[in-house]
Image: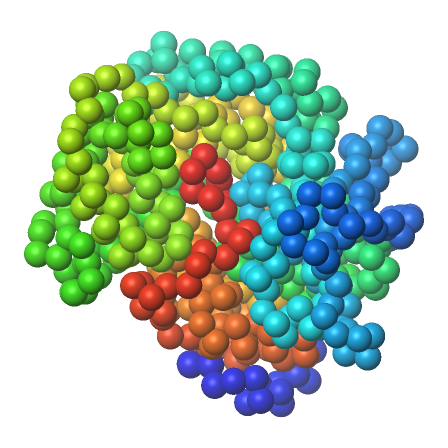
Length: 514
């Protein structure tokens, strides 16, 4: 159902309250049941002390710190300071709705950097109604960042494990790296999971003086939002989950298959666009053959890295850094131009290539996802599955993350959501998202029952809220006036050769998990 504007939805505001009462719990055999959440009083938190951000290049950003326990199971134990930033609403007190907290993606994105440097991510109407607030999640940026040996990170084994010996060497390396990061980072290293960050978010809500939370989570930030609604359903005022993570995917095999399928879909959409668009720099050529030629050159170490001239670009980085950066932004024209330029470039003398080290935020992902692999034989079968599912995109980032998490403990493993008593939650997803596939958004909406309303963007890219006035108006009306779009609402695509900039907070494909 196309979205026809906010005025047509105002009569649904009352219905939104009724929808919340119909939220259901879903439990499926084969999935770990969600831990029983005990109701707890709001944390005792002092008001934040705001001051101008020292590093701000644009005036108006204010920064503060929020003290929280390292381990919420031991509230009287060691503490850490979370870095927080805000920009106040652009109108006077009479029209201000309150504070809206933005949940950054990644894991590893800085919410502070977004508020300080990229506030244009939010519409003028949202900025008029809300103080825009975000934070660096624990282990990130200014919030006790995970710190590891640069030399050890640079020595990361390739995810192309050729034998059981390679598999065991990766397990040993991961154990050594975790020990190094723990020693350099301190006790917070063992408490980086999203369940801990949920408690941080509630402490931030209380410190802002908000009785209920207004939240917009993007990409990995949707995991934080969904688990907050599960833990504190009656403390939610409004919640937007944009580019939705499905934390109920039960097995390593299904996680990797679904990620490969949505990535391949983006490549197929690119080829389809290039075959039809007069502006495609590869028009009239066999796009797959040209791309495969680049993969072959990269595999031999003959393809120059566009970011570091004179150095070789690996086939993995060609996929995960070059192609995915354009897929995230729905920039088909830019990708075609880049492929054409690399295709015409002189080959480098063949040389070994190496895979870039994963970021130190990887422990956050490992603590949230249990993706066990028994041995090299099973690992090889998973790689084969991904290559069959995404034949044009070998060694996608999710298999890198799986290798990096081998042997790691998981504090917050996958489970189906159990949300009871929350108001309607608005989910937003593109049909052709390269990282958080549309099927994930459908799944999470179903887990939320009558409380989950999915707004569909019929286009491409990772991040959809800013994809044209239809999407923007629907989200603005929900956040500011609690007007819920009718079920089945969809918005037309913005042409891939006229796509808007990638919104801040959607994860970078290069070395980061959504």
